[in-house]
Image 1 (spheres, rainbow, N blue to C red):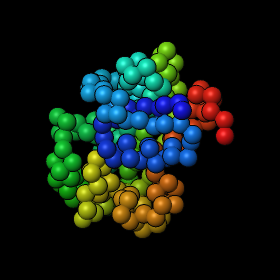
Image 2: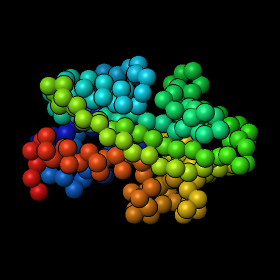
Image 3: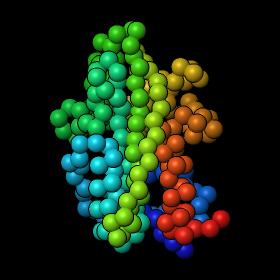
Image 4: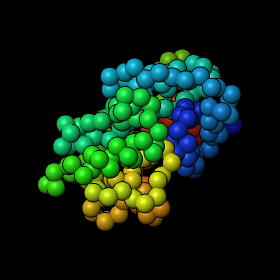
Amino acid sequence: MKKLLIATKNQGKLKEILNFLSDLPFQTVSLSDVGIGDEFEEKGGTYKENSQNKAIFYAKKSGLPAIADDGGIEIDALGGAPGIKSRRWLGHEASDEELVEHMIKISKNLPKNNRKAFFRTVVSLALPNGKVFSVAGEIEGIISEKPHLKLLKGYPYRSFFYLPKIKKYYHESDLSDKEQKLYNHRYKAVQKLIPIIKKELRIRI
């Protein structure tokens, strides 16, 4: 059976992507499954650049086709910040708890008439020969004044991201299985990537 490497150390992302690809007839493996502990340093200036470089790095390292993504939250009132620096907004690789504490302060100071925000991601598939493909996904919401009481590991910003259309937080404990896909920016991107995966890995269903 063909293998596909999910190149992320974020357990939340890994769980999501594995779930989104679960219907395809190949074996999805993680970095730990293939014994890769190397860190990839994100130096790109865009989500796409980081996503592609990361996927290429791990595809060549493992000898397997690899999926990687990069994305962030963009808050309108802050000019799109933190964006590409979402995990390093505090000047270092911040923990979930640190980012939640920072967002509590940010959310209190946002104007009531402009709390719009977007989650955006670019997901890339790279082959060991360096060939790479990328797709994007996004979801719009607002920054809530108070965070969700339950922290979603690996996703601190989702504790503040509210979906007015369905009056729920962008949080797996609030969303149904259908809603988790309908309102998931990464799911939207992965769905666009699946036909490319099938073609490049020569998968027939």
